[in-house]
Length: 361
Ligand code: SAH
Image (cartoon, rainbow, N blue to C red; front, top):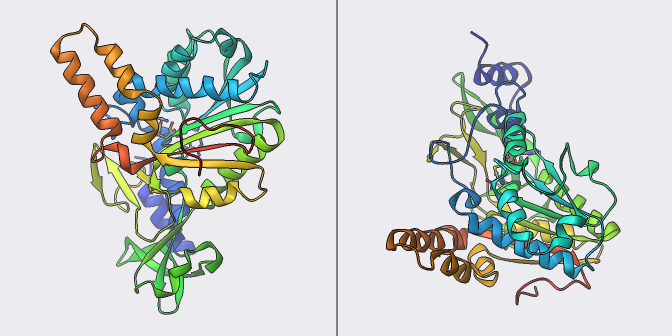
């Protein structure tokens, strides 16, 4: 029997000492042999969780409408990239492209670039998108995207990227690490200190034990996208669970078979994530003063993009059963107690570009 990922992590900690939450997460999710994203089939009813595109085709369709509107907004360039980060099964892209076919020029000018770490998921994406009338290819990272205007999208991609945790300990914020206590993985306090400049102003008055999370990996993505838009034009739409204003709290979570579990048990078997701090991403995007951002709840975004109208159209003349299903879909995607409030949508575009909808923050 091969050594399990858990055992390998335990040996690494035994030999080299505790590892950061970020390193632990990267090992669990991306280990080439036993990492969660390299081995598991995470999505759908039989998987570990259901994402918005897997709930209903309407989600991807409305994003398709947004993409076409943004493409026109940036001057309908004759050549552009449509980049999706972490496309999962490819469902969002398939629904998006079907809706975007309302504008022939969009499909003729665009080339789809998918950034996906899992070979298994790349294959599923290839199958699902084989019939699309737009060229689709894969890129290893944002660095591989051509120097042309690009529209970037990512749904539940950022939450999967590693993050660090810091715990208020006395006067300081010390890094939370994964170590061993009585031979078992456990959270321990390390010696790394959080940079106060990256924390909310009231961090001094936070209670002992309060947790603050920072994700340089997510910020690096926001920086790359921003730089690309500044230099070559384009726009971005990033959707994830998270908060509009930076705040405190431990949001590290493990999800397996639709249940929350212990993030230190069964490494590689559960999806590990944390809430995305959109405020931190907004600060990164705003550094050069050339782009603007707007962050709003998923519910508001979808309603502005025509969720109710689209659901109404799909339900027209259909049975009560179908209409009930559509009603449920609307509630799940946009309802206050479902995904509508917890999930946020962040748009990035050049200053002169009109961002869809009424939000102008
Ligand atoms: N967007 C899809 C899937 C979300 S799950 C949906 O909404 O259904 C996260 C996705 O990001 C998966 O496809 C996963 O394999 C991919 N992923 C995670 N970490 C990644 C990384 N570092 N680089 C590229 N893709 C990654």
